[in-house]
Image (cartoon, rainbow, N blue to C red):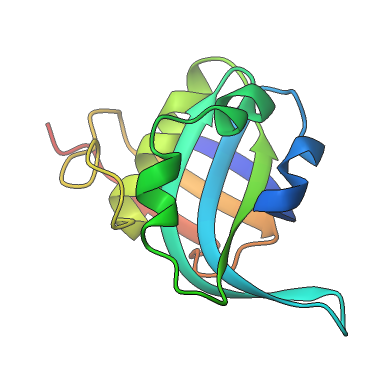
Length: 139
């Protein structure tokens, strides 16, 4: 069984997304609210999980950005988290996370997991994510 560990860093609000690393990895898109007095965010909902060889560039110009923004109410903003991972494991980890969590804005991998059995362990900023789980191949 393949074991993959991801350490999620974040959260970056939409206004601060230029701070997301220009690295290969997995990213999560959340609905959040920002408390300016306490300078913190409250994560409300997981919207989407994606992967890219350069997460900074992918999020900066994502083709689903308008769709994500349509999920927000007036006091909400988008927030992002990031976990560095490269190579073949990146797509496999993305598929496992989507299959397990079924974010509402994802379509691929929601109902199938085409990889061999995979164990995922998460650390860091993991709101709404199960931190240890195993996914079995479905097709």
